[in-house]
Structure formats: structure tokens, C-alpha cells
Length: 233
Image 1 (cartoon, helix red, strand yellow):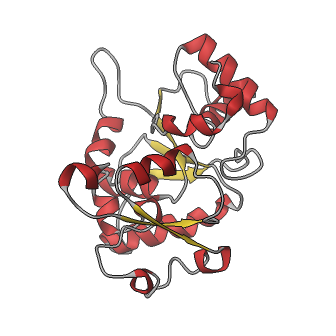
Image 2 (cartoon, helix red, strand yellow):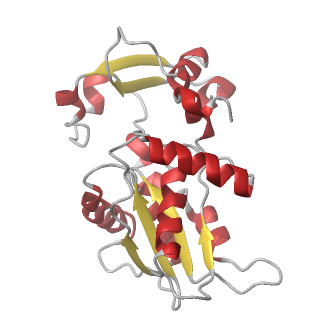
């Protein structure tokens, strides 16, 4: 969509099969003028290799999830907004956000620097989420050096609900209850798993009473269209 507005040609590399129907989000990308190329699982696993982008033509390469120095730097305004107190309230003690590539978590940590009394927790939404410890540390090192100071941070593992973009029945039911009670729309890929993890920790007394919590709703609502069970909500 940014390319369409600014007159920039865009080329998307997608793990998948060209003969499969496009998801609603990929159809949006195509309708905004993006040229789509599909890669196999084997080639997709090579996405972090230095020559991966060059195999597919010239251009400015934006890696998966924006996972690069520029992507981390772009999170600075969001990081400050997350940590600042709102009128009439004290600053948060616990900031929660969903994780895919880990770039948002790395960007928030990098921008905030060392900050007493604040914990930042990422909730991985895919299997093998523990691998994000290495990825976030690498992004931080690339962005600010190995001695960069950050707030206390960690990951809540176990919220992937079967894997990336999976939506078992219990998660769909959680979304239905959550939206009915709060009026806040979420989607199964990221934000529903984030709020479900928070609900689990609260229900089981895993967060100290009185803790000031701020949760980042990172959007992605266009992804709901790929889940028929949510279309009636």
C-alpha cells in the first residue's frame, strides 16, 4: 500500500504455492501493485543468508518482519509511547507485546534503554518461540552494540496455540468472549494469543496484584478475513 501511494515498485517473496488461492491479505498486496513470487519451504529457510535477496533482483531489501537495523530504529516513537504515563496514571511496570520476527520487541528495548521498574515481555506466536532470545539479542547487537542497556525483558512461551496462524477452537471461543466483554477487536495470528496469554497469567496469579500493565495491540485485523468462524462477529 505504501508503494502504491508513493509510486514505488514492490516485489513480495512469499512462502507458498503459486497455484493456491491468495489469502485476503496477499490479494490486497497484489491489488496494490505488488509483484508476488512464491518460494519453497527449503528456500524460505535460507532467508537470513546474505545473498537471499540478490537472487530475486535488485532493490531495497526489507527482511521478514522488518528485522534489520532500520526496522529496529523505526520502533523508537512507539517505544516512548508505550513507556510514558497517561494522564492521571503512573508509568507502566509491565509492557506486553506479541512477537513474530522479534523486531518490535528489539526496537522497543533498544529505544527505551536501561529503565528501572519496567519489564518488557514478548509473547511468541509461533512454534520454537525460544529461538527469539537469540534473534532479539542479535538485532540489539546490530543496532546498538553488544553493551547496549535495555529494560529487563523476557518471553512468555507456550502461547502459540498450535503454531503460527493456527486457530484452534478454544482460541476462536476466546476471541468471541474477549470481544463481547471488551469491545476490542483482535485476530488469531498475534493479538488474540497475546491477550489469551495475559488472561492465563492473571487467572493463575502469575502477575503480582496491583501491577500496572500496558498491552500493545499491534493491529493486523485484516488477517481476520482468513478465518470463516470470525466473519459473523
